[in-house]
Image 1 (cartoon, helix red, strand yellow):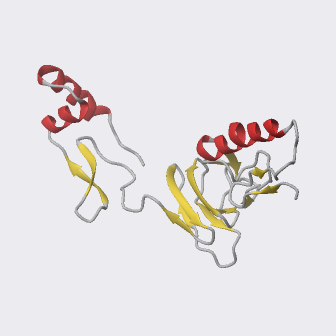
Image 2 (cartoon, one colour):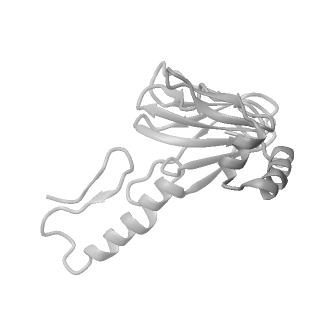
Length: 190
């Protein structure tokens, strides 16, 4: 039986007895390149010329396997990014000038709109895309911490200087100085 490829990440699955004295090359590609890209890879996607269908190649580098999609361009209108119809998580950073909708290639699929200048975590079940951080505001002001409420929903909460000190692990005068810098400079973006 010849090698096959996994459905989600398209990683080569070596058949028993195949690739004698060469399986190490395939294994290194699978582990050192392809899985690494799925966990920490970045693909730059230019949407200036039109909608983009992410490349999805068996056993070699492609766009749809990457963890982060950095969207660029000046399209003048909203664009679509079409991902393969398999389950996957992405971080979409929209540095283009227009909205970008990420959808699967499945007919009638629902997508997620990422506005210019924002980043969001999205996931697909192989049909529809969903926002992984729906319940988190995109930007929090100084002296606000992200907390989980009684229902498990992420939200913002005002924090006192003392609590900020505990969060930073500092105490007394050092705590006051850190709190001032922390409050003045820290904005949590999701």
